Amino acid sequence: MSIQGAREEGPVTTSAEAHAIGADAAADLAATLKAIADPLRLRMLSAIATSPTGETTAGDLATLTAVSQPTVSHHLKVLREVGLLTSDRRGTWVWYRIAPGYRGAVTTLLDRFAPAAVEVHGRAGRPGTEPAGHGEVAGLGNVDPALDRLAASLAERFPGTPEQECYRVVRESYAALARRGGHAAYLVALTEHFARQRIIDAEKARAAEAGHKDAEHKPQVLFVCVANAGRSQLAAALLQHYAGDRVVVRSAGSAPASDVHAAVRSILDELGDTAAADAVDDVTRFYPKPLTDDAVRAADVVVTMGCGDVCPVLPGTRYEDWTVGDPALASAVGVAAIRDELDGRVRKLLATLVPEIPLPTDGTPSAEDSLTTEGNR
Image 1: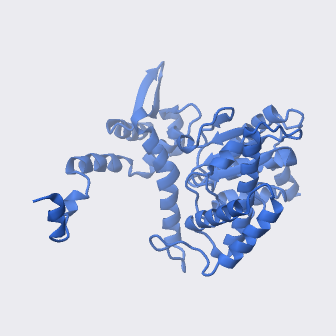
Image 2: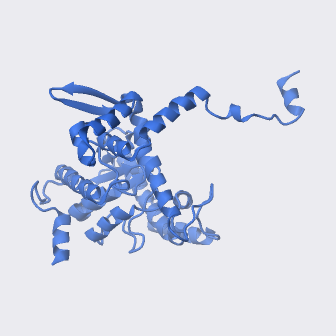
Image 3: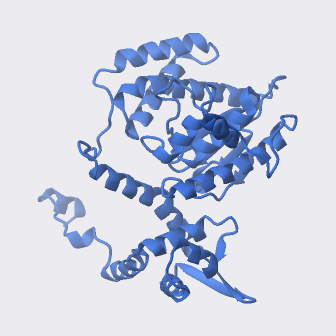
C-alpha cells in the first residue's frame, strides 16, 4: 500500500511521545534547571554573564549576599558541576566564566525568559490585570480608515517614496507594534511615528547606496537590545541628551516588549528632554519597536547589547557590542550602576562622532547628575 493510500484511510493519530523531548534529554535539562533554580545562583550567573571582562571571582560574587565565603563557593561548585561555568586559578584567585557552549543559552535566559517571567509574575499579583490570551493581538477593531489616512499623509510628505510603499510600511508597522502588545489606544500614534522613521531610514539607505552624499550628513546611531525596553532606550536617550540634533538616534529590539521597564522610564522622565529619543508625545515618547533592516542600513554605528547575533552585519557600518546588565532584573542600586555605565560609554562614543561637542570628562558630573542636583534645589 502506498503512503498516499494509507493517508486516505483516515487521520493519523500521534502520541505525546512523538512531540515530547526524549527522556534522557529531559533528565539532563532538569538537572541543569535544578542547578540554577536558586535566587543567589541566578544572581551570580547574571553577574558573570554581564561582567565587562566576561569573568569574575568568588570574592566579587560574595558582595551579592551576606552568606559566608564557603557557601558562595558551594553555589559556584554546583553551577560548575552541571557545566554552566568554567574556572581557572591565577595566583591566589579563581576566576569564573560562562562555559562557551552555554553562552547563547544563558543570554536567552537572562535577556528574554527572565524579564518575561518577572513581568508575568508581577502582573499576576496586580489586581485587575489579566495576561493576554494565546496569539492575541491587541489592535483596534476598525483601524483600516485610520491607517489609510496615515499612509496617504506620509505619501504626501515623502514624495520620494511610492504611495504603495507607504501603504505597505504603515500596515507592516501597525501589525508589528500590535503583535508586541501594549495599549491599543496608542497604536495609531505609534504607527505614525514608527512608519515615518522607517521611511526616512529607507530613503537615507537608498541615497547612500546610490552614492549620493549629503553635505550636511549627521551620524546615525542605532542601539539594539532584545526587548528595546531598557538598555537600548536608555542609551539612546542619553546620546540624544548630549548630542541634541547633531546626531540621529535610533533604538530597536530583536523581540520588543510591550512597554519600557518602569525603572528605566523613571530615568527617561528625569532626563526630561523634549527632543529625546523616539519623541512622540507625553504618553508615547518612549516605546519598544522592532528591529528593521532599513534601520541597520541607515546607521553609521550599530551598538548591540545582548542580541548581536540577530543584527545584520553590513560592510561600511561600525559595530560595537556593549556588555551591560539588564535593568529589568536589577535592583535600584543596579539600575543606577547600569545608567552610569551607559552614560560613560555614550560619552566616549559621542566623542568619536562629534568631537567638538563639550562633554563632562570622567570624574565630573554627568548630565543626569546635573539634572538630579537641579531637581533637588
